[in-house]
Image (cartoon, rainbow, N blue to C red; front, side, top):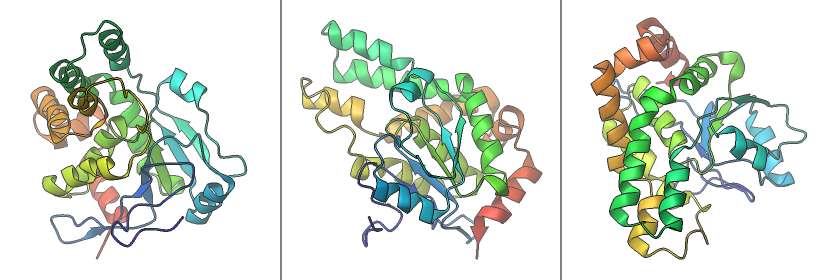
Length: 252
């Protein structure tokens, strides 16, 4: 229930996983992301009463849900009593059907699964733009913060979204990747899942991998040029809007 000494950004929840404060990262200009404003997480469908009290103590106002419609319906938010608005920003996990078919047909290998995941990430800067526009509009509103955004694991859709935000704030790429990969240390939702798979194939499915994130940003640059152009044209966050976001979310 408390932040750990070794990973002060991680907030331990009894019925949740991968819940992290994005504050504390240093941008290239020397300022740091403010604590207590933006959180990333896995789904919030298993929260306990103690967890809800913790989120209330954080002052969470908005929860942006990046899960697909069926995912959200199957595992609704356990936030009764919290004065937080749920903002849907659905990104349907189309890759899941391909993975399930490969598993059922015995075609799942590390290479096949990694290929599916790489294609899935490369799809984010195109297919998922409406969801990310919704997210960034919320992130840019002071009235919406403190804000939590999440998907099911807080790994893929949430990982790419966090990478976009940290990049918009001027956090250097090695730190962006470090935040992305930290899911491997704190996400527990994979425990007991897909144990029928050999370890390398299972790892390709459940791990956050730098190659996956880099594939998404490579596709972004192929289609839009610089990342700034993606923010401007695809997400509606131009230079002035990014500067405002930086002034509100960075300190020091």
